[in-house]
Length: 254
Image 1 (cartoon, helix red, strand yellow):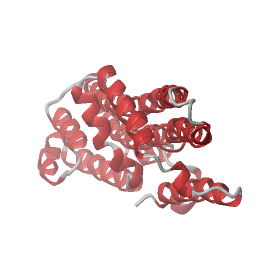
Image 2: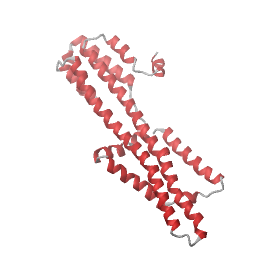
Image 3: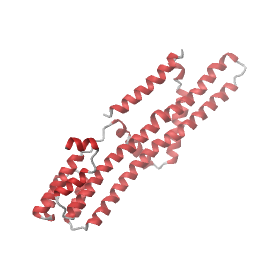
Image 4: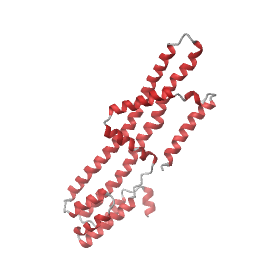
């Protein structure tokens, strides 16, 4: 689990609700089911109109990336590529065919098959980069869907506030209810702005960042397999792929 996401949500909620209590307010004052229905229902509807079903559903399924850890074993990728390079140098490219069944990464398996088939290195890179590009586009769009939630929510919140004020204006004959009515109307704005900046926009940003981490692993695979296809020395391949590691990872490796 990505503990930082959970801690962030808790800190945000406690800070806002705690501030409300410290100001002498009541938490119940900002719990308004009607306002929540208008803001969140209206926002979901707007996003559904904006995106096709496939992209919308992909964005919903990507929530797991926000709360879960994306683990890319970069050192494992390097070790596997180097091993393929050693097999290739000792036994030839065709010997790599026997390694395909043990490879769990679909991109790497596809790349090794291309190497075995004698595909030219530039063509291998081109084919695999198209697949990685589609992967990147998919998750970029998923992040944009959540950013769209963040874009629409404040506006729908204002719409909810205006609707509430219209209801207040219709009941001007009862001055005692005006204060409470206006307070309820502005809760919709809180939901819109709060939902956008505390949930929707951060979700979109984290999905994009984690997708980039996964893409780095895929680029390592492409670079490594192209190097193997070119017959480069496994030691040089290892040095090249180590450039993808973060400074902290390099220090650990050292």
